[in-house]
Length: 271
Length: 348
Image (cartoon, rainbow over all chains, first blue to last red; front, side, top):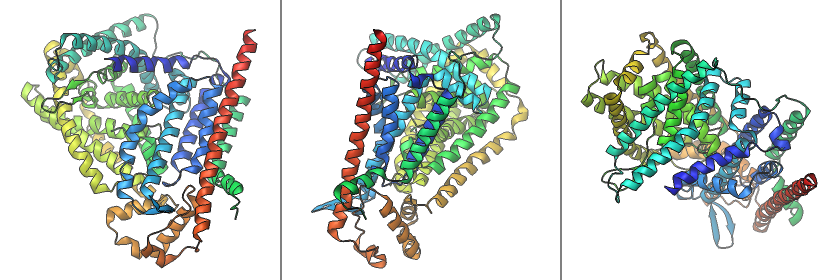
């Protein structure tokens, strides 16, 4: 029960973070969406045994987190929750890939361990930037940016409707679930049959509510479009500098393995 | 069974992104044309409903574990294929953004696996055909379970294909398949039973909701379904083909393919393969002190490196990595301090 309440709180908190007013929050959402996508493509395009070359990419989430004034512990917790899903698959790598790739004295390191570490690294980088994107942009603005970038309007409206209803319905499902929990003893009553009718009731209430809200919206002049923009969004100099700077950074560190070069410099093994 | 960005290659992710974007565009135009406008807010509400319903668990009989609703087939039954597809896609997008559940690049994969299969195959080609014109309880149960089964099997097959073709995971195709399909057989049965329970509850309480959902779909749309199926299959094929080409650039895919097809292929492409290995070797950073197993090294013998040098270079990777990490940390601390002092100044 606590878990459900907790995840709901988490969800709301991420949404609230988007209301802050920082330099990053003020940027046009399109710049942030595109930069995030390019970041992810750069990261996942690394070879499967790459680890160190990905490290400079940590700078992007770190900078956004600090400039965007986001709570690091909270984001870290959210990232840690998701990472096991990628690792479930990655953990098989050491089983199947036993090619010895590195040797420190008597210790042999298999390729599988390296690629598993690489998956972990990718997971950290990609999940953190996705969460940060919402935290510094907000969901409605992200949708708006995607619509401006060519997403069909029907889908954009769908996303915004979904977003509005989620808060109402998750609240309701938490209440329903708590009520069920309080009326059950051990495992009795938590089965599929009860679940079916409970969810059925939730569905009916949802259906009625949707109709009611839609009529209310129509009577207030809803014409199939949301007007969500709170911030004046324009693609100006800041956006160009932000995007251009970061993309140059990503490409540079995608091409050159900076930590490796740095390490060679410090250990004196420069070729 | 959400795909994560960490396991997807750009070629696979990009191809499925394009395929799912095309399907979203097509479905959007269908929804705009065909549905009465009452359905648009309904789609939003039902998406949120699936989201909320997924938070509630139930115990699965005889196993002691608990499960939750997937909802793809349920949405298809309630809304029809196009509206359901858009709804599932929107739910997946919210999950990707708010929970980082399934990545942004892997979103295309997830929309195809969890949205397209139930909405465009399991529902129209199986559920609707099996239920027939007259709705009756026993047929609905059978149809629901079979449709959910097929949808989830296809979805998990999609996950397996996309993961193996991406080549980030070292799981061989057969093993992964044997791991995924039986699990999803169980999940499929549970999903089917739950879907049917909810649908039959609605059928008893408000039959007109289901009837209107059934009637809403004009019959003229039938020829589009095979087309969409072809689109999905071709997307998978293109994804596969593209990343096959992508393996020309060193991303280690050759290995995973060689593992799947059996090791026969390696000796034939001997020279090229080893060159690629050498290229990977040079690119990889934390592990330049790379020692290939004896038999492969004999054949190629990449520029013989002394053991000390090897350890030296891997040391270089580790030292450099540590420096980079601390640099990232320092930037963070510096920016945080600055922001803090600015805030203090602003508040004065």
